[in-house]
Image (cartoon, rainbow, N blue to C red; front, side, top):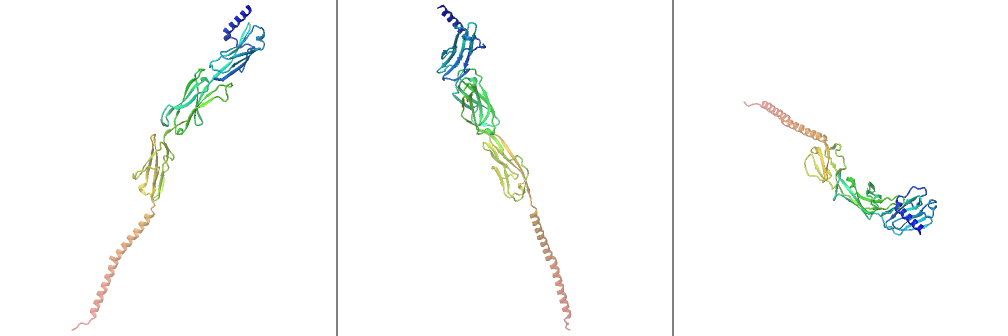
Length: 364
């Protein structure tokens, strides 16, 4: 009776002090597995071989499993701990033995996890984005445990944008929100942003690790006109009478509007391609195409030289000169040569008449 009381007292004394037992003893308990990673609500089990020799030296030595849930079965120095359904978040099982001179134990690391109930992505902005403006992506993870093992990755399409880790030490499920800033660009228009939450539980955890992905968030980005042609192309030389085609193309969101400024300052042109048929000298000069939308404005400047072909003018001038010379010659012929000829004819007539008069005998 007394010996049983002493044994009970010794065991009770050990239990109150087991938390300070030696974890570095030479013949310490060996747990298999040495760590457990269990999904909340799943069964769990571990086996402990308390010692090789140290705990066998005396019949009063204590071999046990300290735990808050589950059952333990003993077979010699081997203990088996089982739990049908693990529903506690914070566990610290210990396998130990106690001798008269020493208390030796080994802790069983237990991680109880729960994959995220939901993962969603959002922006700190409503409506279309504007290029060169900073925005923040937000990834919300609901009801996940343990948070310290949570890693969130942001993506654009299949391109990784960044990664964030949780800082909470809570072993129970929590809600976490992660943020990533980025500058919107033209390339982001129509891109799909999303995030994934991964529980990295180590070698004893499930492989591959539990991953929950968000839905895709499609971005609409407004950006200014991006010219598809040089802003200052080389000067254009075009023969007079040819057709002039000037192209001013740009990509933008919203779709850009076009306006042309012409040297002749005639007409209102609002198409990306300007066509002038049969150019002449009045069409030479600077053409400015202005492209604009609600974000910004761009311009393309063309310098056009119209090359005049003087051959036709030379031919016309020669023809006109010939005509003038012919006219002058005709006038000269009419007013000078013909008049002289008529004068000669008149003198000859007078001479003939005088001669005839002399030859006619005069009556007495």
